Image 1 (cartoon, rainbow, N blue to C red):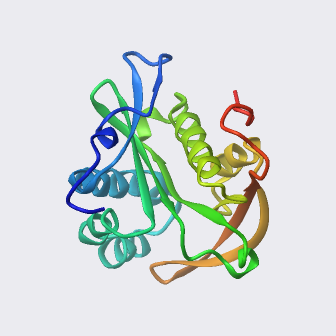
Image 2 (cartoon, helix red, strand yellow):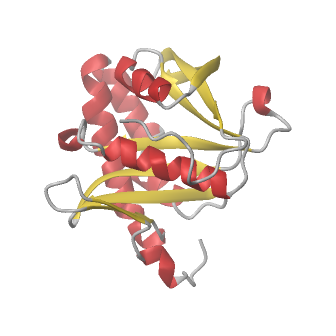
Image 3 (cartoon, one colour):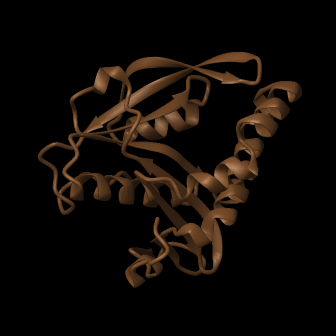
Length: 203
């Protein structure tokens, strides 16, 4: 993002009233980069450390998923970041990306949910649902044909969540966690012909 930021980026794009206070989602800016990096590292570690060896987790966190790398992502072109807040407390974020689609989606206008993270204490409260709703709205507004993502094949809770939203597996991808080769499912959802007023919101 450039140094001149439209004021509407600082305003909530959606509000949800089923929280203790009020869940709001807004576009992130470069000023949010450190916050996003901290949420990323904390959430990734809390989610995956219990399921993986310490050496591989530490190697990944220290080599590929560093705070510096994550901060720099926020300023990259073709990225859109959304932040979710419960009152003033950050509870999750999304990174959308319009490049690096897999070969199976060549010549198709697509957007990727590169990350959709919810803080551990707020999983199951509807944050993921609210963020997914905004992802699909943005994809529709941009005229995309598909929205896609990658998810570890052992992350059954996440896979179940994506399937409820209509995502389907179309191929697999190798993901290296340290020295451990893992398999990610790549999943896609067609949004051709949908409008922001008629797409199905999951309960």
